[in-house]
Length: 119
Image (tube, rainbow, N blue to C red; front, side, top):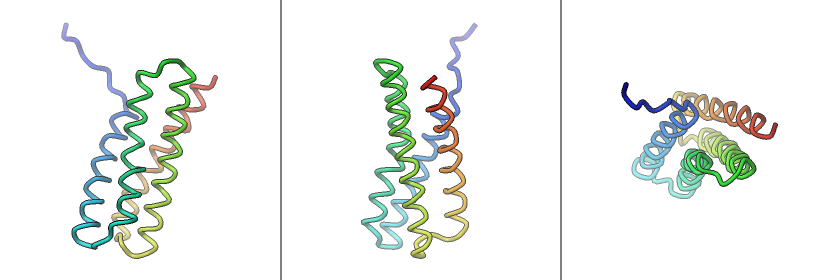
């Protein structure tokens, strides 16, 4: 029997979301010459997955819960930057809707994880 890794949907989705955020940031800087908002988005959007990975090896249940809570805050901030980029015409409606849907899904998953980890 092979040693199979268990799938972690939150970890996987946050990593794929980070890749999309990196690519969007590159696009915004190269094609739209937008540097300030794209860096804010890059920081918060990639922090979501990084904090989830940190939480995996938390020192305690409280540490795990804290890291997940911070990840949730970063996801909420990322949603803000996506909305701002959309409302200032840096994103197409399709880009925005797709990214926001992924971000909202991460937020919902993180809310559930934070609630569960506090009980």
